[in-house]
Image (cartoon, rainbow, N blue to C red; front, top):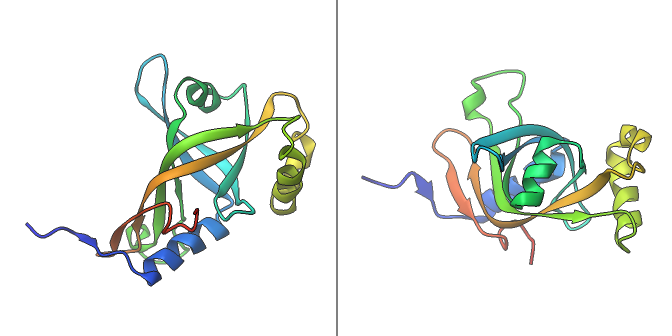
Length: 161
C-alpha cells in the first residue's frame, strides 16, 4: 500500500504557517485525568509573536485542569470555507506540550498585549487571576492540505527553531 503522506515541501510549510497565522480559534484535544478519555474544547487562539498559537485559558476550565495533569495535547486550526466540501479545506493538527505563562511571569505583559491586539474582547477577563496565557510547544504536526494533500511536519517546518 502506498503511503498517502507526501514529502514535506515549502508549499506545505507555508500553508501550515498561514493556517496558524489566520487562526482565531481552534479545537484543543487533551486527556481527561479522571477517565483518560479524549476531551476536546474550542478555544480562542492567535498567532503568537513567535508564529505559534497563543491561547488564553482559565484554571476553571476542564481542559486546563487536564493540561495541568498531563500537558500533552493537540490543537487543530483551519476552518471550512462557505462553499464546497468541508473535507477538501486545509487544516493543521499540532501535537505538543502546553506551557502556561501566568501573571507575574516576565513574559506575561508583552504576550498579553499581543494577544489583546488580535482578541480585543478578552480585555474583559485577561486580568483575572484564574486566567493564564498558554503556548503549545510543538513536537510534530499533521497538515491535511485538502483532498490527497497530507503532510507530516516537524517543529522546524512550523518555523519554531
